[in-house]
Image (cartoon, rainbow, N blue to C red; front, top):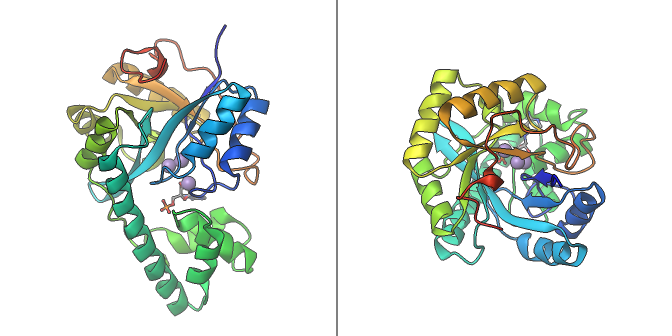
Length: 281
Ligand code: AMP
Ligand code: MN
Ligand code: MN
Ligand code: MN
């Protein structure tokens, strides 16, 4: 029997809107057999998610989506099958969350100068977990009538050359890979088609990623278009990386992304879960 894998999802521990219990319950109802919870820069939801998964008979892959700065760009690296008790990983992620808190203050100050007050407090109030991010600012701005959608807030306020933009100072790729491997996990480049890189730049990223022991890339992603999935399948096969698939689910407010409703990995891609590297059986 073919199992249904969804190896990328978020809860209220970062910028998702479902609690870990609600997320795992929804994944189970959607027919997911193996779910990875991969919140941004925090392991906080994993205990609750693991307990719920055990009750429902679903396999929960403990994960995290690590923010990385690479060649003046932010990229995301998924860690799958990590030991949440790993001190090196915990300390690394704590440093990233410190940066998040400083950045949140800075975004708040910049938006104030642009005439939007109270956004720091508003974003922190919406961030119920340890991880405050741009999505919380975006939701606050929508709730307060500054834009019609989260997507519009990003476009008008939170990306490069816009008033609330602060550049990322995240983990180096090398450090993130060290943490992941110290925690016994497998490293996967998240939604590679979303970075706007040329294929040759993506190949340079993959070469560095592989040199640090990175093993996989997302081929099928809820953050990709169908064309992206096909282009990434080609790259994945050529580069001989393992292939992963994940919805990047953030909650029911984005009805165009569904848990576990992903197309199958294209022919010739070796799934991460079928490899010797896969940390879970
Ligand atoms: P942060 O890690 O706080 O910088 O925020 C990154 C998160 O913001 C991503 O994981 C997405 O959930 C969300 N995001 C990024 N770009 C956009 C966008 N253009 N529209 C909507 N959400 C976005
Ligand atoms: Mn997110
Ligand atoms: Mn991401
Ligand atoms: Mn994500």
